[in-house]
Each structure stands twice: as structure tokens, then as C-alpha cells.
Image (cartoon, rainbow, N blue to C red; front, side, top):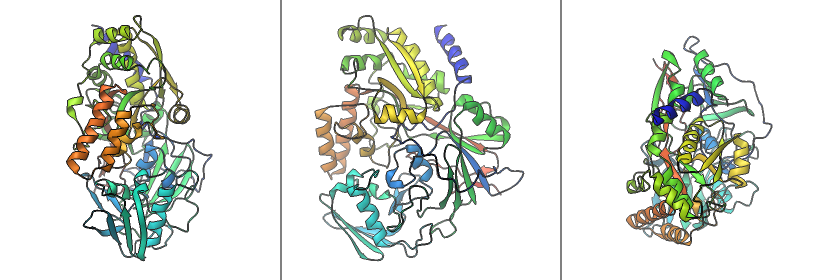
Length: 521
């Protein structure tokens, strides 16, 4: 009876809640007032048969659209269509040649030699040269320019040269199994200075315009080196309200929207079908390990026992989603340790005992700060509040706007706990696990474990694949055993697609590939 009552209460709250969204949990900067080169494009519809669509997204992109300054996962998700590196990810998880047509690796596994495709063009018409590649890598290795997000793996580069216009040689200090994955870093023109507001890449779509907090417009790049995009134009419409996104879908103003909840998709009717994948995010109740009472491992473990993750999936997600037990999601099957998934079975009495042992026999009060435009995280937090109450913990949800979440929680680390999802910037275990090393700038939970730091150093120094994988799994176990966070799930990705559209493709990382989306027939 109690479970049914909770379900009814949750359903009532969900129906009036705010927009679902991608829930990345990566760092971000507040958007600027915005460069606008044009107005919002009229949405395509099956009736007009225009070869363009409007895609609904839950948040604006980063303040700067320069790919080397990108912090938000949501920005990477969209700009995946605009920028490419020497290599790029494929839907099956492989790394495939992109700007480079081929590469070789020296016998000592330290020198990579890339041959660029002939005649690859940037969106401004310039031909890509080896000097552009060298510039792009050096820019992310030194990060001397204000706002550049350094690629830590590039610190191992000892020599970087352009042998001729189409040949790039990169030598690293020690062999690395993961180095190639970081060469998905965007290649941009060396002599172009407007990347912040008018980005130029080599991808299948080119940037046309941006109206901050309203829309981003992309068009097919006719001189693309590979298979061209199948749509002429895509308008990404920023909509931060649940009622508005549903009305926009139902009215025909929006043709596609990812990261919806099952309750939202149930209201769409027969004009849409739902493509199902996973978000490739680590959703958790993230805990500020430097704030009391979460500086005590017993308190953190108590919360892990108090939260019933199966119930979260049942009540908030209609059973969709994949349970996780550490900072790794199932699509990274090589590194995913399923033995950690049920490390903390739901046990309210054990939670109470741990709290009493930690000096909180009567529980305590806490806040859960949640970005309000990310419906899956709001829904999760609502269930967690009810579950923690059973263990004597009084939790209050503090909904805030996304940019406030970024500034206050992610950057400022001024929070007790938060429900959000964290992504991997590339297809490496390092991309998910390095963020919790004690001196890493993105360690927003203030996790501090000398043992964890030591394991990380061993992992990145190892060239033996089996050994490195085992070390990463030890790092995952460290996070779980020390209850760094209350791990919940990799959320299901429910994408509403207007009938007549095809080509939605899911990847093992957080991207929205627009290139193959097309009208049937």
C-alpha cells in the first residue's frame, strides 16, 4: 500500500514538473547574451516536405562555442556534428579515421604518424593542413590561452611536428593504450580567431547562427569530405519547460527531442515513435565529501543502503534504465564491473545503524540541489527524498536553473548533494574516473583518496591492456567501497521522433548524430 501511495504521489508531481533534458553534469559556463546571425527557422513538417527539422534541447550551449573551451556535455553533444579530430568514434565504439585517412604506430608504441585526407576543407573554405593539426593539439596541450580546457593526456607529448602539408608526427613519453582516443580533439584552423561566436570545423554540418537561450542553426556542409548530411538544415530549439516541449512536439513546431521521460512520451500520441537507447551517463546522488556530514564514510554508506534504486527505476522511469554501482556505465563493457552494481542492497535498518554509529541516531537534515530543467534528475530526487525519510534523514530538494547549478555546484562546489548525470568526453575509462582524483579541477565532489590517486597514476602509466583495465576496476571499487556517491543508473534515452523521419543513431558516448537523420522515401 505504501509503495502504491508513493507511486501515485510521484505521478502527480511528475505531471506538473519541468522539462526533461540531457542531465550531463559536466562543467559549464553561463551563456553570453549571444551572437545572432539570423532568426529562428520555421520547423519542418511532413506536410511541407522541407528537408529540415527542428530539434528540441533543454539548455543553451556553452558561452563560447570554441570546441577547445567546451565544458558542457550538452555542447559536445550538439557540436559533434560541427567538429572532427584526426579520428572519431563510430556507433559500435570503434575509433575510425576522420581528418586523417590513416596512421601508423612505431615499434616502441610511442610515435604516431598520421596521413591527412587530401582536400579536407574547413567550413570557411580553407584546406586542412598538418599545421592546423599541430596548432589544435598544441593549443589543448599548453592551454595558455584563457578558457582553453586542457587535454591532460597531451601532457605526455614530447614531440609534435608537421613533416609536410599532409603528415603529422606525434611522439609521447611512454606507450599509452588510450592516447589515440584523445585525438578525437577537434581540429580547427590555425589562423581563425572567431571560434567563440562563429565556430568553424570540418564536420558534416556547419554553424550558421545562434540566438542565446533561443536556438542554434546548422546547415549541411556541401564540401564535406565524407558521406554528406542528409538534411539541409537543423534548428536546435532551446525549450526549458515541460509543458512547452510537449506542446511544441504535438503542434509540429519540434520534430525530434531526446532525453524524455516515459510519462512525457506517453502523452505524444500517434504522430511520433520512440527510439530507445541509453544516455551513457553516470546518474548518482553526488555527495560533497568535504561537507559535513558527508565527510564521514559511514554517513555516505548509510545513504547508499537507504536508497532503493530498483524502486527509483520502477516509480520514476517505468522500469527503464540500467542500474550501476560505480562511476562506469554498461556501454563501456570492457571496464564495467557488474559485481559492484548491488554492493549496497536496500537495507533501511543497516542505514540507521551506520548513522547511529556516525553520531546521528536521530538522522539529520540535508539539501539536494537539482537542475530544474532536467526532469529525470528531478524525478529521481523526489523518490530519494521519500526513501531517505524512512532512514530518518530529512532531505529537501532545492531546484535551481542550469546555469546556477553550473556556477554554484559544479564550479563553486557550494552544495551538500545533487542529483545529476556525468558523461565521458571520449571513449576511455580515464574520462570517467580521472575527475575524482584529489587534485583534478573537475573533482566537484571533493573526493580525496590517496589510494585512488595512486591507482590512477599506475593506470595511466600502464601499457598492458589487461593490467590497465584491472587498475581502472580497482578505482571503481574504491569509489564504491568508500561510497563516494550514491550511484543509481545509466538512464534510458527515450527519443521522440516524428513519423516520417529515420536515422536516429546511438553511440557509447553522449552525442547527437544528426548526419544520418532523414525523411523516409
